[in-house]
Length: 166
Image 1 (cartoon, rainbow, N blue to C red):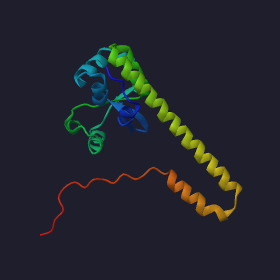
Image 2 (cartoon, rainbow, N blue to C red):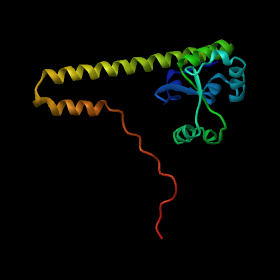
Image 3 (cartoon, rainbow, N blue to C red):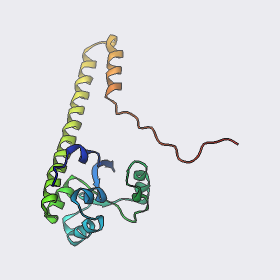
């Protein structure tokens, strides 16, 4: 089995309900099983997956995700499950193939890297606040420019429909 790259996993982590999660279909793809098979294994072990480990997306969340997820079938899926980091860790206990073990290692590394990046960003933001308090307003323009660079880029929304005149 090829080693899963952390970047491959990172692209499949979404922020939903203020939590970093992975979707059942992305996990199934990484594990090399059908989504239906992954969800059956979860249902057989449902006691291991409380609401803070896994939750079902609402129709609205599914439609919102369908705008950014490359999998076109998500829009029509009757159920889509989202797994938090703890839920993914719990999957390692019910999916026991060699591929599942390797995938889980990569996923755990990606979640750790994400947490480290968030912590680093918070630390940088606090340091910047401290510097702003320390220096007078002559540096305001510098601090504003740095904050602008720290802000995540806005993703342009793709227009849906046709433009035209008649």
